[in-house]
Amino acid sequence: MLLEPIFWSLFSLGGFITAFLFPVTLFLLFFAAPFHLWPTDPAAYSTFVGHWKEPLVRLFFFVLIGGSLFHGTHRLKFMLMDAGFKGRSAEAFLDIILNGVAIFGSLGALFYAVRGWLF
Amino acid sequence: MAASDVVFRVKRYRPESGGRPTFQDYRIPYRNDMVVLDGLNYIKDHLDPTLTFRWSCRMGICGSCGADVNGQPRLTCGTYVRDVRKGAVTVEPLSNFPILKDLVVDFDDFLRKLASVTPYIVRKDWGDLRKEYVQYPEDVEAYRQQSLCINCMLCYAACPVFGSSPEFVGPAASALALRYNRDTRDEGADARLAQLNTKMGVWECTFVGECSVVCPKDVDPAAAIQTLKFLATMRHMRRLLMPGSSSR
Amino acid sequence: MTGREYAWKRRPGWWLRNRRYLMFQLREAGGVVCALYGLVLLNMLIQLRAGESAYTAFLNLLRTPPVLYLNIVLFALVVWHALTWFMLIGKAQPIQFTRQPLPWKVVFGINVLLWLGVSGAVVYLIFGGI
Image 1 (tube, rainbow over the protein chains, first blue to last red):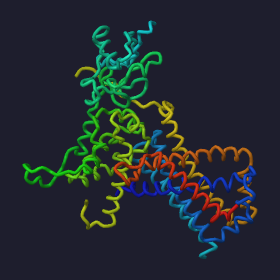
Image 2: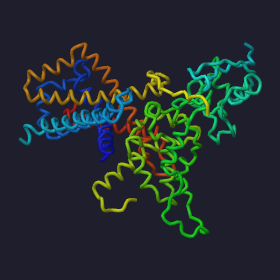
Image 3: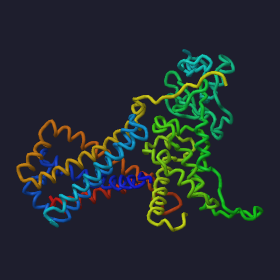
Image 4: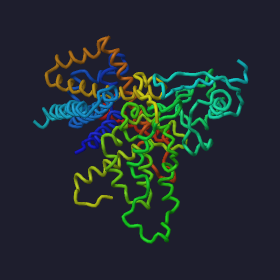
């Protein structure tokens, strides 16, 4: 059965998620404080732990991690195949490893998102 | 060099001797209104009758005269020398295709791919052929853009994915599949989507978009392929989740 | 036919041949970088669970100069990926209210405005405002 349409759909969804949510999120977490572009440090432990109590914030990060992983691993697969990693066995190998990373990463994000909230 | 001259640097390849293609320079008279095809014909008529290239209508409708001009896939009949005349004008055979001789490429593979998408109206029942099939202007508009394809293969020359994956069905064949899928007289959409819903069908495309940039007829095959990806996915999910339902 | 065909091979540096190919490769790289940041965020959540010192150590690692400068380059690729995504939406999924679909530049503008709105919502809903 061709799984490509399903992974492409997740890739597309991930593309929307990363395009709309990543720039502002990464800016606030990693660049706002070091370059003094924000009054507070949104990533500082004490601040972030406060936000982390909100289910919406937990859901947000789960969606962001899942989306970016499915999006980026799909692109990486095609970049590697374009660079010469071709053939049925090579493609099967990439499919398993890269989609595996996306699936396990998303499950990991789900676990850490609900840990401390639902259990 | 006189201002009224231009140098054409043309890729030559002789199949009898094999080896590698080489460049050969020709200095020809320049006119302000000449196209690259005019230059090639001047070379063949006056300087070197062995130069081999395809052409026919010289007005951008037959799709025969595709070549890489200064590294870009162009129709030689539609490319004015004044627009590409920065120093020499380099003319090479279309990228991504095997070379038969000089500027002539082997496109049997493209014809096979075109045939594979059943590029004609398919119906279970034709009914009374003396009756016309009614189509309103909006029905025609739905497939008009893709129907403009002249099979010139500039899109295949531009596509880097086709360049490294020769089995990829490619832009033009996909656009023409969509043209027939969108035709209200056609009943073969499901079979075409099944054909394209494969690894070397639409899923090989990474939306580089260069095919649509070089298309001389604004067919926009890149957008057609993305639409086909969406349609193929919808069909795939329907068959997965609702196997009993009808296909269209 | 006598003689042999000359088999064509794509050159390794094909994507340096014109500006559009280069922009495409950067766009693809930006997509891969998104997955990398996904893993970084996942690790952030893991370190958050591990405690304040582990979390702060990881965050400081990302902010020390060599890694910080690398982050700037990677962030630029992520932003380029977002911009090209907005440019492609108009072509990949045409929005049509009239006889012709909306031109991609119009869709791009709409997406940029949407992105500004969504970013503002993220600032207030996720990060607690300014």
